[in-house]
Length: 236
Length: 236
Image (cartoon, rainbow over all chains, first blue to last red):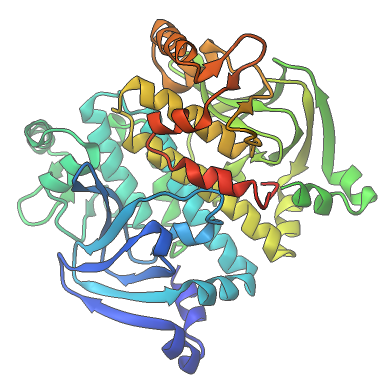
């Protein structure tokens, strides 16, 4: 969705007035707000961040926002339809760059450009399909669930698959995985060890998928598709 | 979203070529397809249907489609981004009327009308927010989960709340609830009996919420919002 970024910053004067570029290091809180008061979108230009929701007195990881994606979907719906006292924050996972955009400025721009509108809709739909999948598969064995979320991440961040291998461009730690799957960390450690022994992944330097096809076999997702994606990259 | 319906049928000649009106009774299969081959949207004009996904050799209820809503979100995303061997079908819950629309006809129309595009985006976003909520709350006590899904249904179908009461316009059976929550039916029976004894709901004639505020207290959703919704109905 870097097209969206370009379109929003065509006029540098307007961009200066209604948007703000932020540069960040890892583990930095980029944005913190109550759902009700939120009036900004965050478009990620570089890097990866996570959205955390305050629930039961602690911050719970909700989802990841990759380069080219945006946060702030609450600004897409009429508050009367759904609102909530959700308190959330966006925290960087890597260093990177993002654009904070005023709600109306963002909406006016996508109203003027249906193909960008479609990209936004496509991104929300994709997240919805993945979330629905995760809800359906919630009782699946942890081995499958762990393979699922690695594959989802590869898909959402459009990571290139080369020679059946993928390198994740940020530390995909046991803590993050345990937090996404909401399971005790020792279960995650066990399965990652299994995957390393089987040479499906390695964590020697970075988190790397060594055998994408075998990882796919552990999951219920259709990995063939993700591969095709890279024949015609979409910058989503 | 009846505006969408009207916009798609402005030209009766084109509508005749690219859409098909269907009338149905309850428990009728309206549409059955593989995700990959799907090239139609279904817009519900009257009544309620359910989407079922074929999984582990049986049809599992995935979600409900209320009047004014649409099915076929797989047509909103590029197949390269996500596709799957999901087999799904749409089955009517009540009698009603719907419009089957060719994918490109639907997309061309919403491209020409950003405010309708926004309504589609709003609907997908709303479903996404609710699904994410359900995933977060998946381990919550069943009493809360049952209150949640009744409230979600009221919200998605924009049912009027009058004198703290709501009547569901279709049989919201123990089977449907057990299927949505994926729990044994006897647990659902127990909680519905509790809710009846407490005069929160009644099932004497139809499924009726007798005390909307108390139902709201069993849930983590913000019921105040849904009420406000009805001050300015949105026909979503």
